[in-house]
Amino acid sequence: MNAIDVVKWLETHFPKELAYEWDNVGLQVGSLNRRCQTVLVTLDVTKEVVEEAVALKAELVISHHPLIFKPIYNVATESPRGRVIAQLIQHKIALYSAHTNYDLAEGGMNDELAAALGLREVQLLDETDRIGRYGTIDPVPLEDFIAFVQRTLNVKDARYIGRSGINIRTVGISGGSGSNHVGAAQRKNCDLYLTGDVTYHTALDCRQMGQNVLDIGHYAEAIFKTAIARRLREAFPDIDVRESAVDTDPYRRV
Image (cartoon, rainbow, N blue to C red; front, side):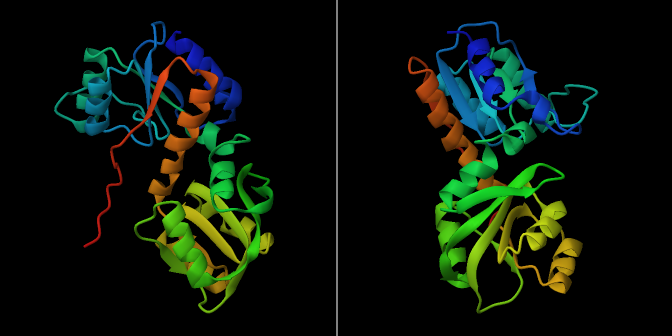
């Protein structure tokens, strides 16, 4: 089995054409024209993740967040990104990223998050940007639902904007930076909107709008590792597909 076979499968289910124009998805480093026996799936690409890939003798790393997001003008190995690129090339490890194409695709990030949280009657949240999901649950007190979200998505710290003492029934969700979709959540009458990043000024707007929001952080998207690894194991039973054990969340409680 070649790495190109794995990538063809990914691009069949999560076409690169779905990605936003500003995004950088697809092959980032290396060659796909080689035999592939071990694949490592990760949320982010750090030097610790590459060291893990080297130890596993992986030929392919699949990440959600791109290592190369904006144009780079050198690969200086004194820089963190340059050092990682050099490590990948040195050990002949290809790097492929599926980012907003995975977020926007059917069966992608937001469907996985909705399923993990047990949402029913799931529909598209924002028709304009083609992103996010919303659905219903049995009514539950806000505090209980937040605790459930933190356990289920392994969220260490969540920031809440809104009223207390309410029950939650309709839930909206958009993985990653979802500040732009707060209005869509309000139009869908979401009792609570979950997203990975809410800016300070958006939080102020949410208070004025009366829209309850739970900022779960970008690391909640680590569900990508489990979801992609599971599906690749089903599609390629002869390949050893591993989920990265590295915690790449840069934030720590203080």
